[in-house]
Image (cartoon, chains in turn blue, orange):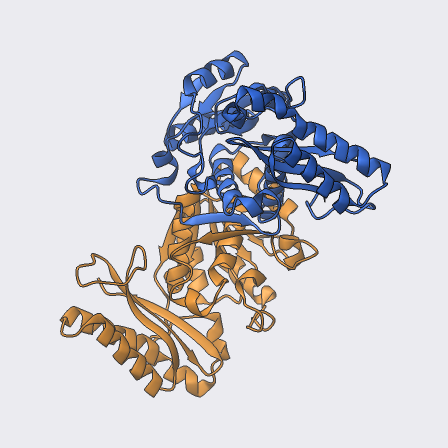
Length: 282
Length: 282
């Protein structure tokens, strides 16, 4: 497995692969890899002849005073794991390499209107512009034919699909179902911010989504009533919920009983950890 | 010369060229071509083995109520001119083809902070986001190694250079000096909005920039005094000037006597035409 740290070295590698007719499958990550990421790599393997993973904790998508500085950085272990599952190359640039010495901020920003200021975007202003900007830049650099993202970050996945469509990126976006702990907690690097006690309690988030799904299927109450009850359940279980929301899967607009594809999405703090999860309803 | 009207046909052509090892030089235009555009094509010819020109009047860069509807569309004559100067292909999509049936607006927007809300951006809010968005999309589609832009739209050129740098587009941006009428008026499609009388008077804009340059070189007055005098000269000549501003060439920040590269930029209405021009000072 090759590791490249500079944009020039990445470009040289990508050019070589494309000249050789390789099909590049790309898995962008912020590192601190767990079984969910490795699942993405496995899916990427099925879609390309070369798998490239990026590891970059992107400052543009963290608000000041949040966990950018403390986000776990574990490059050595990450590299071992990626090598073990047959990744061909890792792109692990520094912040200076990606955004220049000033590192203040990229002047250029990619925003996806409508999808970016709702749900998580309401609670993390600027977050999805940071995501869209770095992903656009990585897509331009990596020139992959396929990129693989987890469904756990469902709003992110939806925004990236829309950006790809709007800007005509020649790339196929593949979403991969969320990998969970046996009791249901979605795998996330931020789970390690949980105390052992909270870690047990955290499964209530997924159980609540399952309950919402069942209630929607049963059609006995309004969506807003179901959402409000779910918020209450989370609160009583010790969470500080931000939202529980039933949405249309394609465009994340408020769900209606006649919507063809529905999904419930939620975000809730538990201790120091902000957890997100989502579940397909139909 | 090939003409392609769809994204699919463009992609097929570009793929074929890239497989054949061609070097694509790209000249994006809004059509209604004049000698300035043909100059861009000539420069593109020197930089690539294939020259592709786009003709697209981009609604995103026109504010409501401005001249989007009336902007001159002369595709047949444009195609003849391009064929005569040896362009290999023209991409002339419809608005629906570029932005979809809803055509309202692309959800995805590319903005370049700092450079987009000054000078022309102050008087045309959203204009440069529309420019950056369509140019990013065209760069992704055309996959050119070189793109050629006129220096007449100097702020646009600066914004595109910055976007290319920030997002790592693998493309070289070439700026081409402004082509002028014998008496100095910069060529522009919007010159045809001028009455014959105003057309004669329009040369005062360039003469004013030359006078500003001389005054800066002579170093007898402050920049703000020189700018104010130029505004007055334009007003007295029947213009409605928006700005005359001495700026640093690289980043368009306010010029200082110790700046290494200086340029004067101006925008002024004359009758129904909004004219812009700029001139290197040193």
